[in-house]
Each structure stands twice: as C-alpha cells, then as structure tokens.
Amino acid sequence: MTTFRMPADEAEARAVQDALRARVVLDEPGPPPGTGRVTGVDVAYDDDRDLVVAAAVVLDAATLEVIAESTAEGRVTFPYVPGLLAFREIPAVLSALEGLPVDPGLVVCDGYGRAHPRRFGLASHLGVLTGLPVIGVAKNPFTFRYEQPGPRRGDFTPLLDEDEEVGRALRTQDATKPLFVSVGHRTTLDNACAHTLALARDFRQPETTRRADALCRSALREAVAGGRGPAQGSVAN
DNA sequence: GCGACAG
DNA sequence: ATCTTGTCGC
Image (cartoon, rainbow, N blue to C red; front, side, top):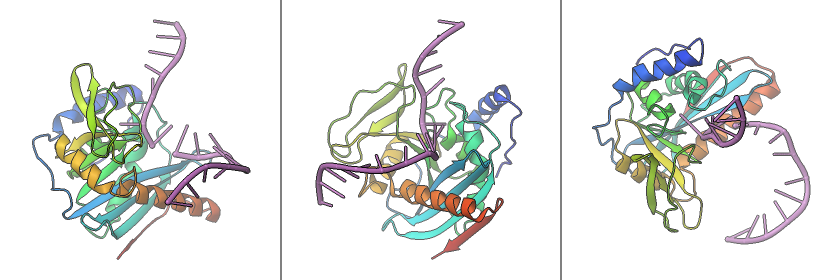
C-alpha cells in the first residue's frame, strides 16, 4: 500500500498523476462478476463545516447482501478541480477502506479511471495506492464523446477521447440514462461493464454505489448533528 | 481569451 | 457534491 501525499498545488497534483500512471495494471481481467466480494466507496461533504465523510460498504457479489461497512470522517484538504477529484476524495476513502474488517475484493467508485484527461482518474489512483482491483462508474460523460447506446439494459457504446476508447456508455436498465464505466486498476473494460451490470440488477446505479452513498450521507448528518470532530467506525455482519 | 468540466 | 416542494408512480 503506497502512502498518499497531499500535493501543495494543482500543478503538483497533475505531476503526481503523470508519475503514478505508469503503475496502473491493465493486463489483468480482474475477479469474475458474481463471485467473492465487491465494495462500494463514496464521499459526502459539508464544505461550510470543512467536513468530509467517506463510506465503504462490502457486498456479497452473488447475493448483493451487505457483509460489512465502514465510515471515516476527515477535514476537506483539497478543492474540487475537474481532473483532480481524487485528491479531494482519496484520503477519506483510504481511511474507510482501512477500517473494514474483511478484504474488499473489487472496489467500485463514483467517477472515472482511464476516462480522464491524463488517463488517471479516481479509480486508477485508488487502485494504484491500494493494489486492489478497481472500476469507475460515473453518472455523466465529463468531456468525452459517445453515441447514444440502444434502449435496453446491457446496450453500450464506446466513450471516446478522440479515437481512443477510454470507457463505455452502458445502459443498466431499460429506458434509463446510461452510466459511464471505465477501468481503474487490474480489470478489463469488458469485465468492468459485466460487474456494473451485475451490480445494477435492480436499479440504474450499482448496488455498491447506492449503499455507500446512503451510508456516507447519513454518517455526515450524524457528524453535523453531533457536532463531533473527525471520527471513524465500522461494523460487520 | 472564453467556456466546459467526474464529485 | 449541495441547496430544495411538490409530485408522479409502483
């Protein structure tokens, strides 16, 4: 596990991305969908109180039942800058992952992996730092181009930066807006899409993202209501 | 120079 | 991400 260093400014952050990009592993297929564990991570903010709360929720990949969950509070240490989201989210996400009592298996995060201006989005960064297989599932296409996929669940089209396929626009439910899937670390794009579809069995968003989103939001509300400073907690089933 | 821009 | 009422629908 590589240690995270907070860059002093945006130029340094971009340099870090350029340096770490070489460590991304793209020639492993990753774990097969429907087996082992899958973990969703997400982050909620209260910028006024300078508070950030991350959540990690581990699911059984076959049943989508919750196996374990963990939250971590922290202080906001980096602004939101398009292309530099990882520096805002990763410190709290790493803390939440470290609080888990079990191995996370495949990690699913909100945002991008290779679908990034420097091919090193949040999912890639998190993968390199933890060594875990990671995929990125985003709700919008950022700056990339794509053709509208077919109307049915499972239909997809390439997400393009110029002529390069950096991800896919994937329809996870009939007649809903597509999600944007890209590889983070130690997975292939085919496998990342297969996992996303398996996890989006009942809703447009993957179950991992839904659970992590709900957990970090409620943990943030509790932190604000209790007026507490940064704390951490986890539970297992 | 201006606008667009994951969460 | 976050600020927010009512409202359509299962």
